[in-house]
Image (tube, rainbow, N blue to C red):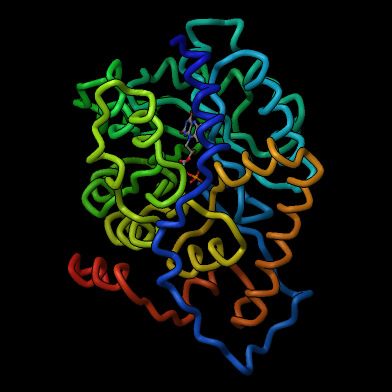
Length: 342
Ligand code: FNR
């Protein structure tokens, strides 16, 4: 199977399986406040990450990497959604476009559709500082995402087997690129120990990329003749990962992602300590099944619902949300207790 075919496979999988709702966010409950003292009209959704002002805490997280006209078209449409809804967007891995220059259009399509919006470049932790700089320049990026995908690589028969030196390479990239760096997982979650290593580096934000939504171990296992089925349930659920990341890296802003579907998932993630929330598979599903206008409508609805919930919780800003009381049940409660994160 070629790389392009694999990318299309991933998109098909995101479409056919949907999301598992294993994020742990259903274990989180808000405590209603009967005297919130707020007004929907005075709620601010703006948030600051790495010195950049975002007008919304939600963003379209990295999806389509190189792979020809289908992925270029998806990136163009996601760019249009980001522009129409005034939300940031990250493109998928640009690694292959460094070697195959005709794949650049896949990514520049997102910038062309959204010339003035916040757009993030994306590369793996195997990249050199020069490659990182090149992917930023390719799309005039406002920030750079470095993705970590150890479990996906291990699940792929042809994937990487050597993960040494990633921390040093991330540091070198941070020192080379002129934009803030976001280190992100891809559906297996960042725990306290990994976050503590990143806390020593000039990283602007950690995107938890938690377990419970799109599952690339399961994707690769479906394609593999010798599936490593034990990896299908591997990972740190999103709710836990938000708390663990914040605890392990108190100097670094936390971004939530992994299985976020609705405004309630987003607001719970923010209340757990995240400053922004990325959505991938769920948005792609809406785009491919119901089209561009339906996705724009959905994103606008999520933004409105966030405001309604913030009003009910008495939170005027995203930072206020970090202080609203929560009750934590079930597995999430036990996980956080046993890790000393309660
Ligand atoms: C992804 N994701 C991803 N991440 C990344 O950093 N670089 C990439 O190239 C891709 N490619 C990609 C393709 C497709 C089709 C999907 C659905 C996802 C991972 C993504 O950014 C995110 O971390 C995970 O998908 C978990 O979030 P969701 O999908 O559960 O919201």
